[in-house]
Amino acid sequence: MDTIEDIGRRPMDVTGRLNILLVHVWFWPHVGGGDRHVELLGRELVAKGHKVTVWCADVPEHNEKEFSRHGISVVRIPATSVLGGVDPIVSIKNLDMSDFDIVHLHDTLPILIRKTALKASKMGIPIVTTYHNDYVKSTLIGRLIKRIRWSLQGNRTLSSSEIIIALRPYFGDLLRSKGARGEIRIIPTGFEPPQDSRRRPERTPEGPFLLYLSRLTKQKGVDILLDAWGSMDDNERNGHAMVVAGTGPMEQDVIDASNSPSESDLHHLGLVDEEEKSWLLENASGLVLPSRFEGLPAILLEGAWAGLPVAMADVNGLGDFVEKGGFGITFQSNSSMQCKLAMLRLSMA
Image 1 (cartoon, rainbow, N blue to C red):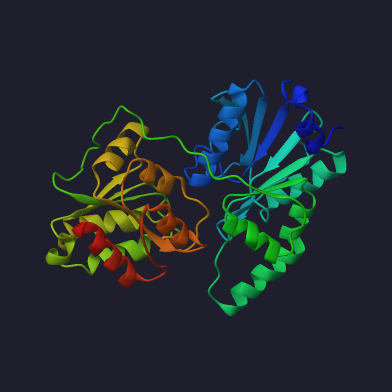
Image 2: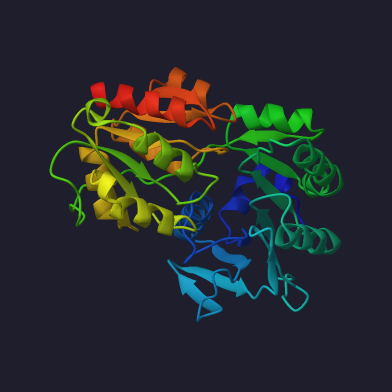
């Protein structure tokens, strides 16, 4: 079987139709940046004439286990449980890989990723792995477990890969420091520019507003955002409201905060479609992203494309990325006070 480098050196082979397996723990109807990245990649490959299949965990459980989405064949694999809320326990024993020309993994540590890497390696199928993110652990025991897992699991995934992709030079350097060998290619996250057609979402305030648009999770710093906004008085808000768009495990926290009599300026929109997202990016005064850890969030790129000032937590090198790119301002991560000061600057810009 040809290696990926063989295919890359012979352009005439690239014109042939490849059967490509993309593997990511999460995929539609789950909502997240990694899911979106995999879907956009799959759609581009389909548009170029390739056959694309996505394997993902069936979390949240969906009524259809196998279906087509934008020309991509999707296989949702049932999970017996989910470790730590982030790593579904799945089996791929009965899934056939013999027809795939290339396997593209989108992570290193999850069970689905490691099982697929092992099976593909035994069958001699070339593997590409994209490293999306580095998970920050603040406690000593957390950092120790992370180091052990990487040594026993993460490096094994990368060592089975013919090509490693990192989203930014920061992650390329990080992987080298973790012992990754071989070629590392820097290929940023893809994104779709905001649509020309725009539609104002319901429950959007009439006056100026700051915007949070991402998954509603602790990883994304939703609790930091709520604490920071709640600590700002009317003068500090400078006539602005806060609009929170998205869905996720912390959605009820956002709903409760928005229903509080003291938080009449906090507006929860829930999940918005592409036209509504385009309207929000066009009309917001600034985008606030208080994440605890991130790779290269698509919403950051979408906001920058729309010319929207961004306040980004300085995590995994994103502060330097934002400031050098001229996208906006940065602030210390995991700090409600620093998030508050960043929002104050956005509201006064």
